[in-house]
Image (cartoon, rainbow, N blue to C red; front, side, top):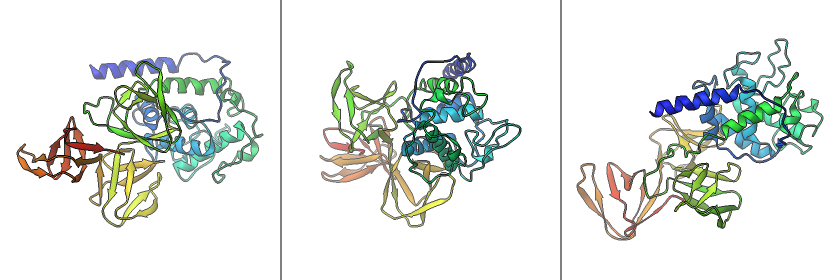
Length: 379
């Protein structure tokens, strides 16, 4: 049944994609803050085309680059990603630009078989697109080093809104901005999920933590503002409610990638010679034994730590969800369910996984969570 629902959703998206696009009076600024998450953006593409033709970066890391580089320049990275979807045909290409060019927006592809600009790395292609959008959107100076080869050809600030790109970014380009916004509108319908957690979280313990980069209203279950949560602090996340993060008791904050970062655990660097990699696979720096790095998602190959950067999975690193402090004597169980020993008050242990209220403390041992006897933290 679940596969049927997914198929129906894909068919619905396909129908909307080919609906006629008409001129719109909607004014959406190119400048501004993104609201979607990389998970939502990547999921949207994969629902349409499960195998995007990308070279050295996967779809979620690419989405993360749009958000992080857009944030640096003050450009809507989530809508810029929608523009890339339009330009590349959901990263299937097939026109003048080739996947290995890392050119996601057709920069320099002016028709007549001209393939346009080549960029050495995915992040360079994204940065060039963001910079080109900034050239159109406003007169603010670039924050990042200029890489857009056509930046100086644009009359600065001539197109502050997405629909102002009509017949400018692409010629002919009637309804060009409307098409971008239509894709973005579809993308917003993707339900919010916490990476490696999903939409269903059965434990009473938090699934993740959210670090606020700006003050955010905490909304009560009845929709009123309960209080304002201050930036610079982390808060426990118990799952999602629609496109909001549940902070407990169905009190929630609206997801907004520019104002928060949600992390699912930390990585403990145990050995030397562990590398932090850039999105293109090049080494960014060596990590120091004892470092603790926030983890936003992971797969079978790597832990992803933001901005498309990652750390390879190996025996020299250890991922954990949080820590448990023992406030009263508690039984530690082995894999057979037998009591292995008693944990004493004041001891603190790392929690490597959570299944309902069973906490994996490593080595095949687990603890049954009891809030009267233990305190869990994932900040």
